[in-house]
Length: 404
Length: 229
Image 1 (cartoon, each protein chain N blue to C red):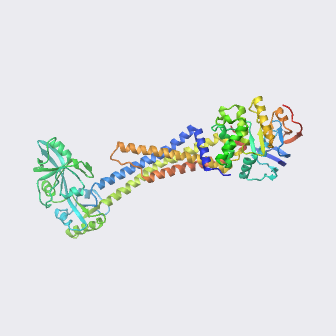
Image 2 (cartoon, rainbow over the protein chains, first blue to last red):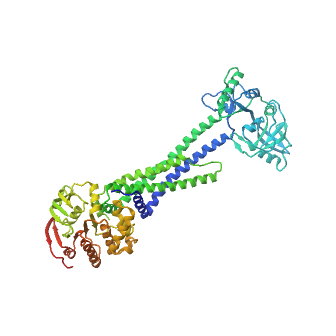
Image 3 (cartoon, rainbow over the protein chains, first blue to last red):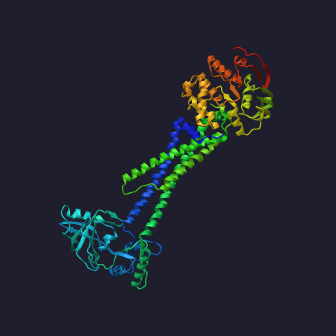
Protein backbone atom coordinates (compact mmCIF):
# COMPACT_ATOMS: atom_id res chain seq x y z
CA UNK A 1 0.00 0.00 0.00
CA UNK A 2 1.33 3.38 -0.88
CA UNK A 3 0.10 6.70 0.43
CA UNK A 4 -0.09 9.46 -2.13
CA UNK A 5 2.09 12.43 -1.20
CA UNK A 6 -0.84 14.83 -1.65
CA UNK A 7 -3.00 12.73 0.68
CA UNK A 8 -0.26 12.58 3.31
CA UNK A 9 0.19 16.35 3.17
CA UNK A 10 -3.57 16.84 3.39
CA UNK A 11 -3.81 14.52 6.41
CA UNK A 12 -0.87 16.28 8.10
CA UNK A 13 -2.38 19.68 7.37
CA UNK A 14 -5.71 18.61 8.91
CA UNK A 15 -3.84 17.35 11.98
CA UNK A 16 -2.02 20.67 12.34
CA UNK A 17 -5.30 22.58 11.95
CA UNK A 18 -6.93 20.27 14.45
CA UNK A 19 -4.56 21.34 17.24
CA UNK A 20 -4.11 25.09 16.65
CA UNK A 21 -2.47 25.96 20.00
CA UNK A 22 0.16 23.25 19.65
CA UNK A 23 0.78 24.12 16.02
CA UNK A 24 1.13 27.82 16.81
CA UNK A 25 3.59 27.11 19.63
CA UNK A 26 5.84 25.06 17.38
CA UNK A 27 5.55 27.54 14.51
CA UNK A 28 6.63 30.39 16.80
CA UNK A 29 9.57 28.40 18.18
CA UNK A 30 10.84 27.57 14.70
CA UNK A 31 10.14 31.08 13.39
CA UNK A 32 12.12 32.70 16.23
CA UNK A 33 15.11 30.51 15.41
CA UNK A 34 15.09 31.32 11.71
CA UNK A 35 14.35 35.01 12.30
CA UNK A 36 17.26 35.24 14.76
CA UNK A 37 19.64 33.76 12.19
CA UNK A 38 18.38 36.07 9.44
CA UNK A 39 18.51 39.24 11.56
CA UNK A 40 21.90 38.56 13.13
CA UNK A 41 23.57 37.55 9.89
CA UNK A 42 22.04 40.58 8.18
CA UNK A 43 23.65 42.71 10.89
CA UNK A 44 26.99 41.03 10.29
CA UNK A 45 26.60 41.34 6.54
CA UNK A 46 25.57 44.97 6.98
CA UNK A 47 28.74 45.68 8.95
CA UNK A 48 30.81 43.96 6.27
CA UNK A 49 29.18 45.92 3.47
CA UNK A 50 29.52 49.16 5.42
CA UNK A 51 33.25 48.65 5.94
CA UNK A 52 33.68 47.60 2.31
CA UNK A 53 31.86 50.72 1.14
CA UNK A 54 33.99 52.87 3.43
CA UNK A 55 37.16 51.43 1.97
CA UNK A 56 35.79 51.76 -1.54
CA UNK A 57 35.17 55.43 -0.75
CA UNK A 58 38.91 55.85 -0.28
CA UNK A 59 39.19 55.48 -4.04
CA UNK A 60 39.68 52.53 -6.33
CA UNK A 61 42.96 50.73 -7.03
CA UNK A 62 44.50 52.62 -4.15
CA UNK A 63 47.87 52.09 -2.49
CA UNK A 64 48.69 53.87 0.76
CA UNK A 65 52.39 54.48 1.41
CA UNK A 66 53.16 54.82 5.12
CA UNK A 67 56.60 55.78 6.45
CA UNK A 68 58.19 53.02 8.53
CA UNK A 69 58.50 49.31 8.08
CA UNK A 70 56.01 46.93 9.52
CA UNK A 71 56.79 43.33 8.76
CA UNK A 72 54.37 41.41 10.87
CA UNK A 73 51.83 43.67 12.49
CA UNK A 74 50.45 45.47 9.45
CA UNK A 75 49.33 48.74 10.91
CA UNK A 76 50.81 49.45 14.33
CA UNK A 77 50.98 52.55 16.52
CA UNK A 78 54.37 53.60 15.24
CA UNK A 79 53.35 53.48 11.60
CA UNK A 80 50.07 55.21 12.36
CA UNK A 81 51.92 58.04 14.08
CA UNK A 82 54.49 58.25 11.33
CA UNK A 83 57.40 57.53 13.65
CA UNK A 84 60.21 56.42 11.38
CA UNK A 85 63.92 57.00 11.06
CA UNK A 86 63.49 58.24 7.48
CA UNK A 87 60.75 60.59 6.38
CA UNK A 88 58.65 60.51 3.25
CA UNK A 89 59.27 63.66 1.26
CA UNK A 90 57.67 65.58 -1.60
CA UNK A 91 60.48 64.33 -3.85
CA UNK A 92 59.53 60.77 -2.91
CA UNK A 93 55.96 61.55 -3.97
CA UNK A 94 57.09 63.06 -7.27
CA UNK A 95 59.30 60.02 -7.97
CA UNK A 96 56.30 57.72 -7.67
CA UNK A 97 54.57 59.32 -10.65
CA UNK A 98 57.15 57.89 -13.05
CA UNK A 99 55.56 54.54 -13.78
CA UNK A 100 53.11 53.24 -16.40
CA UNK A 101 51.31 51.41 -13.57
CA UNK A 102 50.60 54.60 -11.63
CA UNK A 103 47.80 56.95 -12.63
CA UNK A 104 47.89 59.53 -9.86
CA UNK A 105 49.85 60.40 -6.72
CA UNK A 106 48.71 62.60 -3.84
CA UNK A 107 51.00 63.44 -0.90
CA UNK A 108 49.25 63.97 2.43
CA UNK A 109 50.24 66.14 5.38
CA UNK A 110 47.90 66.46 8.34
CA UNK A 111 47.75 68.88 11.22
CA UNK A 112 45.33 71.07 13.07
CA UNK A 113 45.16 74.81 13.40
CA UNK A 114 42.84 77.67 14.27
CA UNK A 115 40.78 78.83 11.33
CA UNK A 116 39.63 82.45 11.52
CA UNK A 117 37.49 84.59 9.22
CA UNK A 118 34.90 87.32 9.63
CA UNK A 119 35.70 87.40 13.34
CA UNK A 120 34.80 83.75 13.78
CA UNK A 121 37.31 81.13 14.85
CA UNK A 122 37.40 77.36 14.89
CA UNK A 123 39.98 74.59 15.48
CA UNK A 124 40.04 72.42 12.36
CA UNK A 125 41.89 69.60 10.68
CA UNK A 126 44.22 70.92 7.99
CA UNK A 127 44.95 68.54 5.16
CA UNK A 128 47.88 69.35 2.87
CA UNK A 129 47.73 67.65 -0.50
CA UNK A 130 47.63 68.22 -4.26
CA UNK A 131 44.93 68.61 -6.94
CA UNK A 132 45.10 64.83 -7.59
CA UNK A 133 43.53 64.12 -4.20
CA UNK A 134 40.05 65.02 -5.47
CA UNK A 135 40.15 62.37 -8.19
CA UNK A 136 41.87 59.74 -6.04
CA UNK A 137 39.31 60.06 -3.21
CA UNK A 138 36.37 60.44 -5.63
CA UNK A 139 35.26 63.57 -3.80
CA UNK A 140 32.86 66.12 -5.19
CA UNK A 141 33.03 69.90 -5.01
CA UNK A 142 29.96 71.88 -4.04
CA UNK A 143 31.30 75.26 -5.15
CA UNK A 144 34.39 76.76 -6.81
CA UNK A 145 37.41 74.69 -7.70
CA UNK A 146 39.85 72.29 -6.03
CA UNK A 147 43.57 72.88 -5.44
CA UNK A 148 45.38 74.11 -8.58
CA UNK A 149 47.47 71.77 -10.72
CA UNK A 150 50.91 73.22 -9.88
CA UNK A 151 54.27 71.86 -8.79
CA UNK A 152 54.04 70.13 -5.45
CA UNK A 153 56.65 72.41 -3.88
CA UNK A 154 54.73 75.57 -4.75
CA UNK A 155 53.06 76.95 -1.61
CA UNK A 156 50.05 78.71 -3.13
CA UNK A 157 47.89 80.53 -0.49
CA UNK A 158 44.58 78.93 -1.46
CA UNK A 159 42.28 76.56 0.37
CA UNK A 160 39.22 74.40 -0.10
CA UNK A 161 36.94 74.14 2.91
CA UNK A 162 34.44 71.56 4.13
CA UNK A 163 30.76 72.40 4.30
CA UNK A 164 30.75 72.55 8.11
CA UNK A 165 33.60 75.06 8.15
CA UNK A 166 31.76 77.03 5.49
CA UNK A 167 28.56 77.09 7.54
CA UNK A 168 30.29 77.85 10.86
CA UNK A 169 32.66 80.55 9.63
CA UNK A 170 30.83 82.15 6.75
CA UNK A 171 27.23 81.33 7.66
CA UNK A 172 24.95 82.66 4.92
CA UNK A 173 27.63 84.70 3.20
CA UNK A 174 29.48 83.56 0.06
CA UNK A 175 32.73 81.80 1.04
CA UNK A 176 34.47 81.39 -2.32
CA UNK A 177 36.80 84.34 -2.89
CA UNK A 178 36.98 85.26 0.80
CA UNK A 179 40.16 85.19 2.85
CA UNK A 180 40.65 82.69 5.67
CA UNK A 181 43.37 82.84 8.30
CA UNK A 182 44.85 79.47 9.15
CA UNK A 183 47.35 79.77 12.00
CA UNK A 184 49.47 82.77 11.10
CA UNK A 185 48.89 82.60 7.32
CA UNK A 186 46.13 83.84 5.04
CA UNK A 187 44.52 81.65 2.37
CA UNK A 188 41.92 82.56 -0.20
CA UNK A 189 38.93 80.16 -0.30
CA UNK A 190 38.67 78.77 -3.84
CA UNK A 191 36.22 75.94 -3.27
CA UNK A 192 33.78 74.25 -0.92
CA UNK A 193 33.62 70.48 -0.61
CA UNK A 194 30.45 68.53 -1.27
CA UNK A 195 28.57 66.39 1.19
CA UNK A 196 30.60 63.14 1.28
CA UNK A 197 30.59 63.23 5.05
CA UNK A 198 32.96 61.08 7.01
CA UNK A 199 35.30 58.89 5.01
CA UNK A 200 37.73 56.68 6.87
CA UNK A 201 40.07 58.90 8.86
CA UNK A 202 38.79 62.19 7.47
CA UNK A 203 35.62 64.13 8.21
CA UNK A 204 35.48 66.08 4.97
CA UNK A 205 32.87 68.48 6.36
CA UNK A 206 35.23 69.68 9.04
CA UNK A 207 38.47 69.87 7.06
CA UNK A 208 40.41 72.59 5.31
CA UNK A 209 42.48 71.38 2.35
CA UNK A 210 45.53 73.42 1.32
CA UNK A 211 48.50 72.74 -1.01
CA UNK A 212 50.95 70.29 0.56
CA UNK A 213 53.86 72.79 0.40
CA UNK A 214 51.73 75.37 2.23
CA UNK A 215 50.88 72.78 4.92
CA UNK A 216 54.57 71.95 5.36
CA UNK A 217 55.35 75.63 5.85
CA UNK A 218 52.38 76.06 8.20
CA UNK A 219 53.40 73.14 10.39
CA UNK A 220 57.13 73.68 9.84
CA UNK A 221 57.84 70.17 8.70
CA UNK A 222 59.30 68.57 5.58
CA UNK A 223 57.88 65.09 6.04
CA UNK A 224 54.69 63.63 4.64
CA UNK A 225 52.08 61.75 6.66
CA UNK A 226 51.13 59.46 3.76
CA UNK A 227 51.40 59.20 0.00
CA UNK A 228 48.28 58.01 -1.80
CA UNK A 229 49.01 56.23 -5.08
CA UNK A 230 46.32 55.23 -7.55
CA UNK A 231 47.20 52.38 -9.88
CA UNK A 232 45.98 52.55 -13.48
CA UNK A 233 43.81 49.45 -13.11
CA UNK A 234 43.10 46.61 -10.78
CA UNK A 235 45.67 44.45 -12.54
CA UNK A 236 48.22 47.26 -12.22
CA UNK A 237 48.02 47.27 -8.40
CA UNK A 238 50.70 44.57 -8.07
CA UNK A 239 53.23 46.17 -10.43
CA UNK A 240 52.48 49.61 -8.93
CA UNK A 241 53.14 48.33 -5.43
CA UNK A 242 56.41 46.75 -6.54
CA UNK A 243 57.36 49.99 -8.28
CA UNK A 244 56.63 52.02 -5.12
CA UNK A 245 58.69 49.68 -2.94
CA UNK A 246 61.60 49.54 -5.42
CA UNK A 247 61.65 53.30 -6.06
CA UNK A 248 61.55 54.27 -2.40
CA UNK A 249 64.16 51.67 -1.46
CA UNK A 250 66.45 53.11 -4.13
CA UNK A 251 65.80 56.63 -2.87
CA UNK A 252 66.28 55.62 0.79
CA UNK A 253 69.82 54.22 0.49
CA UNK A 254 68.65 50.73 -0.43
CA UNK A 255 66.60 50.41 2.73
CA UNK A 256 62.99 49.20 2.58
CA UNK A 257 61.60 51.51 5.21
CA UNK A 258 58.02 52.09 4.06
CA UNK A 259 54.85 50.08 4.34
CA UNK A 260 52.57 49.88 1.33
CA UNK A 261 49.01 48.94 2.07
CA UNK A 262 46.78 47.99 -0.81
CA UNK A 263 43.13 48.75 -0.50
CA UNK A 264 42.31 45.20 -1.57
CA UNK A 265 44.56 43.76 1.11
CA UNK A 266 42.96 45.75 3.91
CA UNK A 267 39.53 45.09 2.54
CA UNK A 268 40.20 41.36 2.30
CA UNK A 269 41.36 41.31 5.93
CA UNK A 270 38.27 43.14 7.14
CA UNK A 271 36.17 40.94 4.89
CA UNK A 272 37.58 37.81 6.50
CA UNK A 273 37.09 39.17 10.01
CA UNK A 274 33.53 40.32 9.40
CA UNK A 275 32.62 37.15 7.53
CA UNK A 276 33.88 35.13 10.49
CA UNK A 277 31.87 37.40 12.77
CA UNK A 278 28.74 36.92 10.64
CA UNK A 279 29.17 33.15 10.67
CA UNK A 280 29.75 33.24 14.44
CA UNK A 281 26.60 35.24 15.22
CA UNK A 282 24.67 33.10 12.73
CA UNK A 283 25.95 30.01 14.53
CA UNK A 284 24.91 31.40 17.90
CA UNK A 285 21.48 32.18 16.52
CA UNK A 286 21.32 28.68 15.05
CA UNK A 287 21.41 27.34 18.61
CA UNK A 288 17.86 28.65 18.94
CA UNK A 289 16.96 26.43 15.99
CA UNK A 290 18.25 23.48 17.99
CA UNK A 291 16.15 24.62 20.95
CA UNK A 292 13.15 24.87 18.62
CA UNK A 293 13.88 21.34 17.44
CA UNK A 294 13.87 20.06 21.02
CA UNK A 295 10.56 21.85 21.60
CA UNK A 296 9.13 20.23 18.48
CA UNK A 297 10.30 16.84 19.76
CA UNK A 298 8.64 17.42 23.14
CA UNK A 299 5.41 18.69 21.65
CA UNK A 300 5.33 15.83 19.14
CA UNK A 301 5.87 13.33 21.98
CA UNK A 302 2.90 14.87 23.76
CA UNK A 303 0.97 14.76 20.47
CA UNK A 304 1.72 11.05 20.07
CA UNK A 305 0.53 10.52 23.62
CA UNK A 306 -2.67 12.52 23.04
CA UNK A 307 -3.32 10.86 19.70
CA UNK A 308 -2.64 7.29 20.79
CA UNK A 309 -6.24 6.21 20.17
CA UNK A 310 -6.13 7.80 16.72
CA UNK A 311 -2.90 5.94 15.92
CA UNK A 312 -4.55 2.71 17.12
CA UNK A 313 -7.52 3.42 14.87
CA UNK A 314 -5.27 4.06 11.86
CA UNK A 315 -3.55 0.76 12.51
CA UNK A 316 -6.91 -1.00 12.80
CA UNK A 317 -7.88 0.54 9.47
CA UNK A 318 -4.76 -0.90 7.89
CA UNK A 319 -2.00 1.68 8.38
CA UNK A 320 1.46 0.12 8.38
CA UNK A 321 4.24 1.23 10.76
CA UNK A 322 5.90 2.92 7.84
CA UNK A 323 2.73 4.86 7.00
CA UNK A 324 2.34 6.07 10.60
CA UNK A 325 6.01 7.10 10.61
CA UNK A 326 5.59 8.97 7.32
CA UNK A 327 2.40 10.72 8.52
CA UNK A 328 4.14 12.10 11.62
CA UNK A 329 7.33 13.03 9.76
CA UNK A 330 5.38 14.86 7.06
CA UNK A 331 3.51 16.71 9.80
CA UNK A 332 6.88 17.78 11.26
CA UNK A 333 8.19 18.66 7.81
CA UNK A 334 5.14 20.81 7.09
CA UNK A 335 5.41 22.47 10.46
CA UNK A 336 9.14 23.16 10.14
CA UNK A 337 8.74 24.50 6.61
CA UNK A 338 5.89 26.81 7.63
CA UNK A 339 7.85 27.91 10.73
CA UNK A 340 10.93 28.57 8.61
CA UNK A 341 8.89 30.57 6.08
CA UNK A 342 7.31 32.59 8.88
CA UNK A 343 10.73 33.12 10.48
CA UNK A 344 12.18 34.19 7.15
CA UNK A 345 9.43 36.78 6.71
CA UNK A 346 9.89 38.08 10.27
CA UNK A 347 13.68 38.10 9.83
CA UNK A 348 13.44 40.05 6.57
CA UNK A 349 11.11 42.53 8.26
CA UNK A 350 13.65 42.82 11.09
CA UNK A 351 16.42 43.50 8.59
CA UNK A 352 14.22 46.10 6.91
CA UNK A 353 13.62 47.75 10.30
CA UNK A 354 17.37 47.85 10.94
CA UNK A 355 18.00 49.43 7.55
CA UNK A 356 15.25 51.93 8.27
CA UNK A 357 16.62 52.77 11.73
CA UNK A 358 20.27 52.82 10.63
CA UNK A 359 20.36 53.89 6.98
CA UNK A 360 24.17 53.68 6.90
CA UNK A 361 24.06 49.95 7.65
CA UNK A 362 23.06 47.89 4.59
CA UNK A 363 21.64 45.04 6.70
CA UNK A 364 20.71 42.42 4.11
CA UNK A 365 20.81 38.76 5.15
CA UNK A 366 23.30 36.92 2.94
CA UNK A 367 21.79 34.24 0.68
CA UNK A 368 23.82 31.49 2.33
CA UNK A 369 22.41 32.29 5.77
CA UNK A 370 18.83 32.42 4.48
CA UNK A 371 19.10 29.07 2.70
CA UNK A 372 21.13 27.49 5.51
CA UNK A 373 18.70 28.59 8.22
CA UNK A 374 15.79 27.09 6.27
CA UNK A 375 17.66 23.84 5.64
CA UNK A 376 18.77 23.62 9.30
CA UNK A 377 15.24 24.44 10.55
CA UNK A 378 13.57 21.82 8.38
CA UNK A 379 16.26 19.20 9.06
CA UNK A 380 16.14 19.86 12.80
CA UNK A 381 12.34 19.69 12.84
CA UNK A 382 12.26 16.40 10.95
CA UNK A 383 15.16 14.82 12.89
CA UNK A 384 13.66 15.82 16.22
CA UNK A 385 10.36 14.27 15.15
CA UNK A 386 11.96 10.92 14.34
CA UNK A 387 11.77 9.71 17.94
CA UNK A 388 8.08 10.61 18.46
CA UNK A 389 7.19 9.31 14.98
CA UNK A 390 8.94 5.99 15.63
CA UNK A 391 7.23 5.75 19.00
CA UNK A 392 3.87 6.28 17.26
CA UNK A 393 4.71 3.72 14.57
CA UNK A 394 5.60 1.07 17.16
CA UNK A 395 2.46 1.46 19.24
CA UNK A 396 0.58 -1.77 19.84
CA UNK A 397 -2.80 -1.29 18.11
CA UNK A 398 -4.82 -3.07 20.82
CA UNK A 399 -3.29 -1.02 23.63
CA UNK A 400 -3.51 2.16 21.53
CA UNK A 401 -7.21 1.59 20.82
CA UNK A 402 -7.92 1.09 24.50
CA UNK A 403 -6.54 4.59 25.28
CA UNK A 404 -9.05 7.42 25.12
CA UNK B 1 -14.07 -18.13 5.66
CA UNK B 2 -12.39 -18.10 9.08
CA UNK B 3 -10.72 -21.16 10.59
CA UNK B 4 -8.95 -21.23 13.94
CA UNK B 5 -6.93 -24.31 14.96
CA UNK B 6 -6.06 -24.66 18.66
CA UNK B 7 -5.48 -20.96 19.11
CA UNK B 8 -3.97 -19.89 22.43
CA UNK B 9 -3.11 -16.44 23.67
CA UNK B 10 -1.01 -15.93 26.78
CA UNK B 11 -0.10 -12.69 28.54
CA UNK B 12 2.67 -12.16 31.04
CA UNK B 13 1.50 -10.28 34.10
CA UNK B 14 4.48 -9.78 36.39
CA UNK B 15 5.98 -13.25 36.83
CA UNK B 16 2.71 -15.02 36.05
CA UNK B 17 1.29 -16.17 32.73
CA UNK B 18 -2.38 -15.52 32.09
CA UNK B 19 -4.03 -17.78 29.53
CA UNK B 20 -6.53 -15.42 27.87
CA UNK B 21 -7.44 -17.98 25.20
CA UNK B 22 -7.09 -21.75 25.49
CA UNK B 23 -7.08 -24.06 22.48
CA UNK B 24 -9.79 -22.27 20.57
CA UNK B 25 -10.79 -24.14 17.44
CA UNK B 26 -13.48 -22.55 15.38
CA UNK B 27 -14.75 -22.30 11.83
CA UNK B 28 -16.92 -19.44 10.62
CA UNK B 29 -18.18 -19.67 7.08
CA UNK B 30 -18.44 -16.77 4.70
CA UNK B 31 -21.62 -14.76 5.22
CA UNK B 32 -22.32 -16.12 8.71
CA UNK B 33 -23.74 -13.94 11.48
CA UNK B 34 -22.06 -14.84 14.77
CA UNK B 35 -22.34 -13.33 18.22
CA UNK B 36 -19.72 -13.93 20.89
CA UNK B 37 -20.91 -13.51 24.44
CA UNK B 38 -19.48 -14.06 27.84
CA UNK B 39 -18.64 -12.32 31.08
CA UNK B 40 -15.82 -9.79 31.42
CA UNK B 41 -12.42 -11.44 31.17
CA UNK B 42 -13.80 -14.42 29.28
CA UNK B 43 -11.52 -13.68 26.33
CA UNK B 44 -14.13 -12.56 23.79
CA UNK B 45 -12.39 -9.24 23.00
CA UNK B 46 -9.00 -10.98 22.80
CA UNK B 47 -10.54 -13.41 20.32
CA UNK B 48 -11.94 -10.51 18.29
CA UNK B 49 -8.52 -8.80 18.22
CA UNK B 50 -6.92 -12.02 16.97
CA UNK B 51 -9.61 -12.42 14.31
CA UNK B 52 -8.99 -8.80 13.26
CA UNK B 53 -5.20 -9.36 13.09
CA UNK B 54 -4.64 -6.65 15.70
CA UNK B 55 -2.99 -9.24 17.93
CA UNK B 56 -1.00 -12.43 17.43
CA UNK B 57 -1.74 -15.84 18.82
CA UNK B 58 0.76 -17.46 21.17
CA UNK B 59 -0.03 -20.85 19.67
CA UNK B 60 -2.22 -22.46 16.98
CA UNK B 61 -3.02 -21.41 13.45
CA UNK B 62 -5.41 -18.93 11.89
CA UNK B 63 -6.70 -19.22 8.33
CA UNK B 64 -8.57 -16.33 6.71
CA UNK B 65 -10.20 -17.05 3.37
CA UNK B 66 -8.10 -20.24 3.08
CA UNK B 67 -4.87 -18.35 3.65
CA UNK B 68 -2.70 -18.99 6.71
CA UNK B 69 -2.35 -15.55 8.28
CA UNK B 70 -0.75 -16.73 11.54
CA UNK B 71 2.78 -15.72 10.66
CA UNK B 72 2.17 -12.69 8.49
CA UNK B 73 4.54 -9.75 8.88
CA UNK B 74 3.24 -6.52 10.42
CA UNK B 75 3.01 -5.02 6.94
CA UNK B 76 1.10 -8.00 5.53
CA UNK B 77 -1.24 -7.97 8.53
CA UNK B 78 -1.92 -4.25 7.99
CA UNK B 79 -2.67 -4.85 4.32
CA UNK B 80 -5.02 -7.71 5.16
CA UNK B 81 -6.82 -5.59 7.77
CA UNK B 82 -7.25 -2.81 5.26
CA UNK B 83 -8.58 -4.97 2.45
CA UNK B 84 -10.51 -7.79 4.15
CA UNK B 85 -11.56 -6.73 7.64
CA UNK B 86 -13.79 -3.95 8.92
CA UNK B 87 -13.98 -2.85 12.56
CA UNK B 88 -16.84 -1.27 14.47
CA UNK B 89 -15.93 -0.20 18.01
CA UNK B 90 -18.00 0.52 21.08
CA UNK B 91 -16.52 4.06 21.34
CA UNK B 92 -16.96 4.77 17.58
CA UNK B 93 -13.30 5.88 17.32
CA UNK B 94 -14.00 8.71 14.92
CA UNK B 95 -11.25 11.30 14.47
CA UNK B 96 -12.80 14.42 16.03
CA UNK B 97 -11.12 16.97 13.73
CA UNK B 98 -12.35 15.21 10.57
CA UNK B 99 -15.90 15.38 9.27
CA UNK B 100 -17.98 12.28 8.55
CA UNK B 101 -16.84 11.98 4.92
CA UNK B 102 -13.19 12.43 5.87
CA UNK B 103 -13.50 9.78 8.58
CA UNK B 104 -15.06 7.33 6.14
CA UNK B 105 -12.34 8.15 3.62
CA UNK B 106 -9.47 7.11 5.94
CA UNK B 107 -9.11 3.40 5.02
CA UNK B 108 -9.25 4.27 1.31
CA UNK B 109 -6.60 6.94 1.83
CA UNK B 110 -4.35 4.37 3.56
CA UNK B 111 -4.95 1.98 0.65
CA UNK B 112 -3.77 4.60 -1.82
CA UNK B 113 -7.09 4.75 -3.68
CA UNK B 114 -7.14 7.72 -6.11
CA UNK B 115 -9.03 10.74 -4.88
CA UNK B 116 -11.88 10.64 -7.43
CA UNK B 117 -12.63 7.00 -6.72
CA UNK B 118 -12.38 7.70 -3.00
CA UNK B 119 -14.96 10.44 -3.17
CA UNK B 120 -17.37 8.28 -5.12
CA UNK B 121 -17.02 5.33 -2.74
CA UNK B 122 -17.35 7.52 0.36
CA UNK B 123 -20.49 9.11 -1.08
CA UNK B 124 -21.96 5.66 -1.80
CA UNK B 125 -21.12 4.40 1.70
CA UNK B 126 -22.69 7.43 3.38
CA UNK B 127 -25.72 7.26 1.08
CA UNK B 128 -26.30 3.58 1.89
CA UNK B 129 -26.37 4.44 5.61
CA UNK B 130 -28.64 7.47 5.12
CA UNK B 131 -25.84 9.85 6.11
CA UNK B 132 -25.44 11.79 2.86
CA UNK B 133 -26.72 14.97 4.47
CA UNK B 134 -24.26 14.55 7.37
CA UNK B 135 -21.14 14.18 5.21
CA UNK B 136 -19.64 17.49 6.30
CA UNK B 137 -20.58 17.27 9.96
CA UNK B 138 -17.89 16.76 12.57
CA UNK B 139 -18.43 13.88 15.05
CA UNK B 140 -19.45 16.28 17.82
CA UNK B 141 -22.29 17.49 15.57
CA UNK B 142 -23.73 13.98 15.21
CA UNK B 143 -25.88 11.87 17.52
CA UNK B 144 -24.52 8.62 18.99
CA UNK B 145 -26.42 6.52 16.47
CA UNK B 146 -25.20 8.66 13.58
CA UNK B 147 -21.61 8.41 14.82
CA UNK B 148 -21.83 4.62 14.91
CA UNK B 149 -23.33 4.60 11.42
CA UNK B 150 -20.40 6.72 10.23
CA UNK B 151 -18.08 4.17 11.85
CA UNK B 152 -19.96 1.37 10.04
CA UNK B 153 -19.65 3.27 6.76
CA UNK B 154 -15.91 3.57 7.39
CA UNK B 155 -15.68 -0.17 8.18
CA UNK B 156 -17.47 -1.17 5.00
CA UNK B 157 -16.17 1.36 2.50
CA UNK B 158 -13.32 -0.99 1.53
CA UNK B 159 -15.90 -3.79 0.97
CA UNK B 160 -14.35 -6.22 3.46
CA UNK B 161 -15.31 -9.88 3.67
CA UNK B 162 -15.46 -9.80 7.48
CA UNK B 163 -17.03 -7.19 9.77
CA UNK B 164 -15.97 -7.32 13.43
CA UNK B 165 -18.11 -5.35 15.89
CA UNK B 166 -16.94 -4.94 19.48
CA UNK B 167 -19.91 -3.97 21.70
CA UNK B 168 -21.34 -1.84 18.86
CA UNK B 169 -24.34 -0.74 20.91
CA UNK B 170 -22.49 -0.25 24.20
CA UNK B 171 -22.56 3.55 24.02
CA UNK B 172 -26.04 3.89 22.54
CA UNK B 173 -29.60 4.02 23.87
CA UNK B 174 -31.79 1.05 23.10
CA UNK B 175 -33.50 2.57 20.09
CA UNK B 176 -30.25 3.70 18.46
CA UNK B 177 -28.62 0.39 19.40
CA UNK B 178 -31.29 -1.63 17.66
CA UNK B 179 -31.07 0.62 14.61
CA UNK B 180 -27.31 -0.04 14.46
CA UNK B 181 -27.88 -3.80 14.78
CA UNK B 182 -30.45 -3.58 11.96
CA UNK B 183 -27.83 -1.85 9.85
CA UNK B 184 -25.20 -4.49 10.60
CA UNK B 185 -27.68 -7.27 9.82
CA UNK B 186 -28.53 -5.60 6.54
CA UNK B 187 -24.84 -5.66 5.65
CA UNK B 188 -24.66 -9.33 6.65
CA UNK B 189 -27.56 -9.98 4.29
CA UNK B 190 -25.18 -8.78 1.53
CA UNK B 191 -22.86 -11.73 2.37
CA UNK B 192 -20.47 -9.94 4.70
CA UNK B 193 -19.43 -12.20 7.54
CA UNK B 194 -20.59 -10.46 10.73
CA UNK B 195 -19.07 -11.21 14.12
CA UNK B 196 -20.45 -9.24 17.06
CA UNK B 197 -18.96 -9.28 20.55
CA UNK B 198 -21.56 -8.24 23.10
CA UNK B 199 -22.58 -8.35 26.74
CA UNK B 200 -26.17 -7.80 25.75
CA UNK B 201 -28.03 -11.13 25.59
CA UNK B 202 -30.85 -9.58 23.55
CA UNK B 203 -28.37 -8.47 20.86
CA UNK B 204 -26.49 -11.75 21.07
CA UNK B 205 -29.66 -13.77 20.55
CA UNK B 206 -30.34 -12.05 17.25
CA UNK B 207 -27.32 -13.78 15.66
CA UNK B 208 -27.95 -17.04 13.80
CA UNK B 209 -24.93 -18.52 15.52
CA UNK B 210 -24.14 -17.79 19.15
CA UNK B 211 -20.83 -18.57 20.79
CA UNK B 212 -20.44 -18.39 24.56
CA UNK B 213 -17.04 -18.03 26.19
CA UNK B 214 -15.90 -18.51 29.78
CA UNK B 215 -12.27 -18.31 30.99
CA UNK B 216 -10.78 -18.25 27.53
CA UNK B 217 -12.69 -21.27 26.27
CA UNK B 218 -15.74 -21.75 24.08
CA UNK B 219 -18.38 -23.27 26.29
CA UNK B 220 -21.28 -23.16 23.86
CA UNK B 221 -21.64 -22.81 20.11
CA UNK B 222 -25.30 -22.78 19.07
CA UNK B 223 -26.82 -22.32 15.68
CA UNK B 224 -30.53 -21.61 15.58
CA UNK B 225 -33.32 -19.47 14.28
CA UNK B 226 -32.99 -15.73 14.28
CA UNK B 227 -34.28 -14.81 17.72
CA UNK B 228 -36.58 -11.87 18.13
CA UNK B 229 -35.27 -8.94 20.15
